[in-house]
Image (cartoon, rainbow, N blue to C red):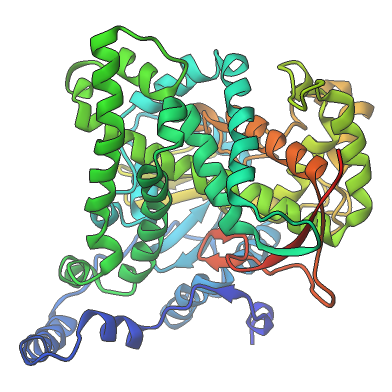
Length: 518
């Protein structure tokens, strides 16, 4: 028995039987159709064989390289990806290794390969393909090859961040007021649900101003688009490729996605049309995208669709981080007061954080980064699909149709890079910044370097991480000033939800909040 087989992680509750019951409701026509399908599947199992993946000879395969063990490891990956990646990283000495997964054997690369691959042509080394593959983009529409939104985030949002944040912080106050209960006494609050609602409104303020942030239909669709896409992707992965187009037609999560696009158009297009008529300029993503769009990108429906896809990237990721932070603070309450002291030293008289003060929140930044190290959203980053054989300077040739990546979470548990890596040390990175000024940038939450790749690396590193960092700090500052927090009696830290390489905060756990006098 493998060591990781002894664990009992929280995983998404899916099974093949329940999926079939959802897809086929027992009506005579559907049952007859199902009978025909069973015959077809039986025939295809005999005659259809997937193209075998070419592996680099001599490279370690986690769990063993014979066919039986590879098949077993592919299934284990659904629940035990973290343990398998840590094992491969350790056994390979941080070098090349394969980790079997339902999508095939993924080739994990050493960090020394990053600079060779980060600027490779997209028709050779494809960044977007892995995202589309992970979230079954053919059916969920997750993922986009448009460069409009990353262009705008890099050139406009990051440049105007200081001007955007005052409105964002005001929206945080209003969103907490609307979403949270009074909490006059200790009150259990579903953390992920509440923060997702708050972050959806706050992010929408940046997307399209207050009008978008207060459009309830848009806010709910922006949340549900990601949830439906995630659940739909996990469900459809259970089917063989040739059955997916049919299965997708009977999955409510996937069939409902069209409605979310309609909601995006209903919210965004009137704003765009009103601005076109008035010539109004705005400090938000929707305005900047409309200004920077070229050719077909100018179509209003296209702009609305991109806004919806950006919401997927922004809302749930930015809600996951403070949820994990709250769980960590309840587990380590001794760090609450030092963080409050820092917050009080940077907030203005009205309780907001000025542009230069975000940089002085070094304790909060460090806590965020350490929490991220233990609870990364993705275990693997810098994922790419290699479309053509690619030879590295070390002489190793990556075969075509190979998915490559960096085992980011395993790297952050390397004792050579992070002393005592198994110890949760919230102010670890603040000490690094103080003791080694030359590492100031490399030890920040938003850092992107070979030992810290939660946000990716190179030209495809997450361009919105600077906004996300300030958004999270502003949310945590307001929350810690406004509320006391604690676990209920006997409660321990909620276990993260696992879905292959994704690590998500427990979706239903509650934490007790009590309003403070400030």
